[in-house]
Amino acid sequence: MVTVRVAFPERGSAAYDVLIGHGLLQELPILLTSHCPAARYVVITDAEVERLYGRKAAARIDAEVFSFPAGEAHKTRETWAQLTDRMLAAGVGRDAAVVALGGGVAGDVGGFVAATYLRGIPCVQVPTTVLAMIDSSIGGKTGVDVPAGKNLVGAIRQPRLVVTDLDCVNSLPPAQFASGIAEAVKHGVIADPEYLAFLERDAAAILARRDAALERLVARSVEIKAAIVATDEHEAGVRAALNFGHTVGHAVEAASGFSLLHGEAVAIGMVYEARLGEALGISASGLAAQITALVEKFGLPVLRPGSASVDQLLKHMRSDKKVRAAEIRFALPRRVGEMHVEARGAATIAAPEALVREILAGRQ
Image (cartoon, rainbow, N blue to C red; front, top):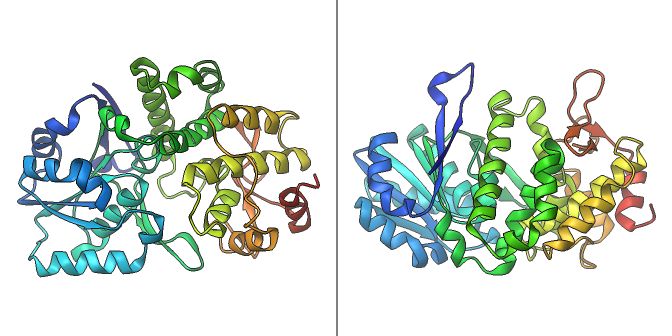
């Protein structure tokens, strides 16, 4: 088992471990007792993960399962309200803890319920998708989508523990598996040239889900995410680097009616944002082509769907969390392993909307 510590120098009490290994779901009772003791546990998950893992996990820890329909379309305030109402009706008290079991949606919703229920109870994240394992389960971001955009209502509240059982990867359909790798590509681009080279060189082994390649993929991405989050818990600065590909990606995802998986949208977003960076003279020439070739190697899309018009995308981007003074802002790499930082220390940069429109339209 690999352990990655997520520590916050200014808040030592908030530190927690990310455990990575095989068969860890079977160890859940021991892990919860040692890292997050509680009088009662509730498992929050979606209906699909409940069928695959939820009932067994709940039986091991003598917990009640609170599930909701699977899919991004159900990552809503209504789902949050239904879950909290059901927990209140069941008499769940402040001495309880939430086990958020599943992919990014279940982790975000479960974490948001824990952050707000009775003004906050502990949460343990148990990711079951590659995307959740390497990205969304780490860093404490929780929340739901609203009509104006993705993740616009939520809270930052760190989990007590993250339990990553690599055996769960075996149940993922190919598209879900590839979707998670988009976040790994992002980690390589923003922080680690050697890691990106590994993704390029060992793509076949990763897609074959070979143990050594998979373990390196998950562990290195977790290390990168943990290091960034530890220095900027509330996204006041360098943590914005993790948003590379997400300004366009979130807009593409929303404009598609969430028919695209999150990682698919992020892959598209990275390509367009790298093109934008090159057009602005920020990103090294050829970076967009390098990213395009790599995400295509993993079977990920690189072009916005025809159903997502430029006007639709710009409308969604104007609601992005990074908008400041009505300007759409982007986290852009200078080159692999180095992000652009403005003279005053800002980690994102505003881009002229006319240029963004040209990039999205494919005219640049």
